[in-house]
Length: 406
Ligand code: CTP
Image (cartoon, rainbow, N blue to C red; front, side, top):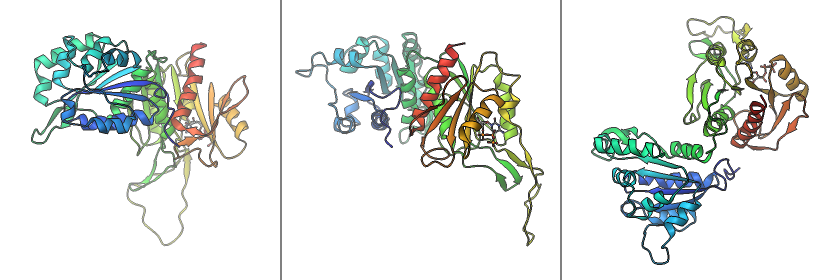
């Protein structure tokens, strides 16, 4: 399945400004990510940027002409047209020079002129040598740009250009910038001011120092929900078991191992959550004892004694914030709807996201899911097979409607 059509990028127009820094090689990948998510990308290169990357690279990636000159014949009003058309503007990398010019309202090239003409939200991604970043002038420019309403990312601390060692000044990775552009595109921030608690992934129940019981959960559904809630402006905490996928940007991460640890981490935060989405697949059983040393082969079979772990959702019932919306999942192989309804009542939920464990393209590990939304007082709603990121948006739309109704 392709990425096309992912909210909030699909059909939105992003102006990608690239100024002349070595990090501009990463901006080609950012353009690619935006395109893959369904955005239309207009690239503006400063003259200095063309010393580092070629217009043809961006043209091939975006399928659109790349803009450079303010005074190119036939393009006299490009800065106005581009600024007007943009739903969001991102300048990556934003060099010290670009920041200085933007901070003082200069309009001596196409990019700075477009910035002045823009009404769309602007994200600046500074990247430069660490001493240039630390300079009081650059810091003052950064501060002033923030007061003008621009969003600025902090540079990463890491390897700079060759021979310059490492320090703060490195451009954040394209995936991080891409996520921030998403938050910019969700300008209304439909979950702004809301605390959202999400759980994701499996838990592990240790048997001895080298073995554990767990399940196939990848955490893809839960991390997609956390990422989407953050883009919509929420303050998101993600309590997650061991994951081997990238963690979402902007979200507070609380890593745990066992179901009991996950319960404790949730208990600490449940009282302030306006919405809770329990998409984790906590292990339901733990070994009755944990061997202090590695269990050795004995030449025969071994029987494991298992104890039930705590049910996290049930354990939160009396601690929930009044009016909080609680969403649970149900992973079933038989009697799907009846089991989902039982969980809705038994765990005190507002909504159950039901998926069939044995259906191709749905459930654990894969990038897609086919879910049925079960709520009190309405017919179950079956959604088609779709990318988990789209499923996340569908879940959040319904969750928001419930929040709005309280
Ligand atoms: N859940 C939980 N605590 C557990 C197990 C599950 O809070 N110890 C949550 C899951 O995160 C999910 C919901 O309960 O939101 C249903 O999980 P599921 O695995 O479908 O059901 P179980 O409660 O484990 O019941 P069963 O195994 O009998 O289907």
